[in-house]
Structure formats: C-alpha cells, structure tokens
Length: 355
Image 1 (cartoon, one colour):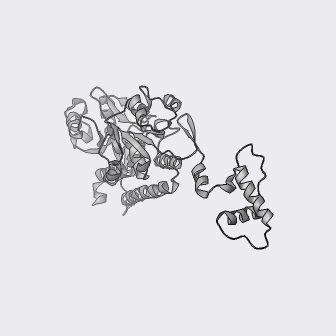
Image 2 (cartoon, rainbow, N blue to C red):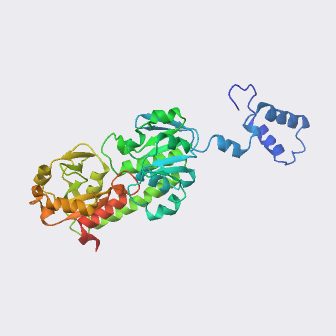
Image 3 (cartoon, rainbow, N blue to C red):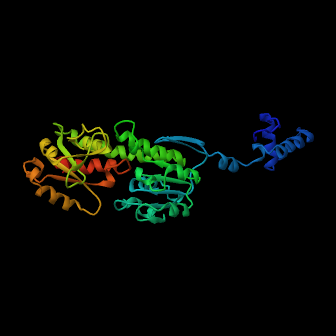
C-alpha cells in the first residue's frame, strides 16, 4: 500500500478470497456477493499490493533490495540491480564477467592483459568504450547507471565519484584501493560478494569463491606434503623502475599471493601495498627469487635483462642463479585471478612439488 493511503489492510482470509476472484476461480457458494464486491472495490480503489501482480512487486523490490553498500568513503543504497554498468580496469571487468553480468553491461575499458579465455565470449558481447580510460563525455554517452573501477585513477580527470553521482550514476571502487588492513584472500572474497550483492546474484559469488578456494587448497596440499613441507623461498618483487625498485609491500594482495605460494616477501615490513626501495636495499636483502610483474611496454624479458646487467645486484642469489618468476600484473590485484596467481607462482618457486 502506498504511503499516505487511508485504506485499511485487508485481513488474510479476505485477501485470499480477493486473489481467487482476480484469478477467475469461482468464489465458494457461501461467500456473500456483497463481500466480493467490497473486496474488489478495496483492491481497485486503494491501489495497494492486493491489486498488483507478483511480477510488479518483484520489479519494485527485488529480493535482497534495497541494498546499502559502504565503499571507500561512499555509501550507496541500491533500490534494484544496475542495468547499464560500465567496468574500467581488467580486474573489475573480470569480476563482472565471472559473475555472469555481461548482459547488465553497456561498456568496458582499460585492459592490462588479455581477457581470460573462460570470459572471452562474454567479453566480446560488451562494447569497448576506449583503449584506456574514456573521457567523461564518452562515459556519459554510454548512459551508464553504474561504474565499477579497479584503480583509484578510474575516478580522476573529471570522472570523480561525486561528479558521476551528480549525473545520477552510482560507482564502486575495488576495495584494495582503500583497505582497512592488509589485503588477503578474504578481501578478494569480500569484493566478489559485494559486487554480487549490488547486482542481486549472491549465489554466483559463492560458486566463484568455492572455485577459488579449491585452487588454493590444491596448492596448499602440494606444498605441505608429502613431508617435509616446502621451505619458504625468499622473494622480492620487481614491478618496475631504473633508478629505484618499485616493489610489493606487506599491505597488498601481492604479499598474500607470495605467502600462499610458499614464499617470503622480503619487503613485507613495508606497510603499504607498493613502494620504492633502492637497488642497494634490494641487494642487501638477498632474494633467492625475483618476481617480475609483467605489463606495459617493457616485457618481462626486458626487465630480466635489465636486472641481470645491474652491477648493484651482481651478488644477489637470484641474479647469480638467474632465478626469476613472472606474474602478469592482472593476476596480482584483488580480483578473480588471485588464486590462479598463487598456483602459478608456487609452481615457479617449488617446481619439484608440481611434477
């Protein structure tokens, strides 16, 4: 019943009889004709739910809605699932596709890597708005009702969350960009569940999370046995840099990936997801393996060649033994590739456990 209505709510038995009348079922012979007329008048005159179909009610209030989500300082109440979503950045796009939401997407943009094969067909159904970030005008032209960004840079250069909200567009930022503590696999699961909540598909989230956990369980079993358990390998990340080393600290998902893969991140004492250290600091910590993040114009092979030629690193065990591991950047963020990154890295750090 709409707010402000003065019509009384019908009793349960009366409502059942009214439903019988509307569906064409003949009313019991003992029901007074006057009662039937009154019930029909109430249903028509009040405009309440008694006169609406279940389909109408579902459209007004889908299961699980309204849903209120607090995200990186922005609180949004969703009355119903978005129908015209745009995803920007690889990991945001793949979370959407992993949840089977391509039919709710009107655009995407800014990949760092090829889409995972299992999502390719779904991805091909979504319009690519731009190679990198679309302009504010291009974004508005897609008429989205929701924008999901993987990096904080999604909402820069005129595409601020406040500006989009003013235009009637809801937004969500991957929570690795505003963590309240170290990012772990629990954070990955929370991100997947939150997007599923926004779109009203919680069951899909649980199925995806179960598949990620299965991968992690498989890796854990390999590293644990048969006894003895694999000895953690001392690891440092080389993301990029020629004057300094841009590396993974202890607060991001990269640290968690290393730990679960049977490694020890030598810069886990850096209380942020990423940061710069000197080549001398890298050498002093003597990593046994250097993990290269592969993305952009400089290939993993070019990065490896640069590190091997750096005189400051010549005594580092990883350099002397030419021990490198490679992970695509798209798998080292809070998204559906994280469990696969653990398995890939574990195979490179402990190849004997995966023969």
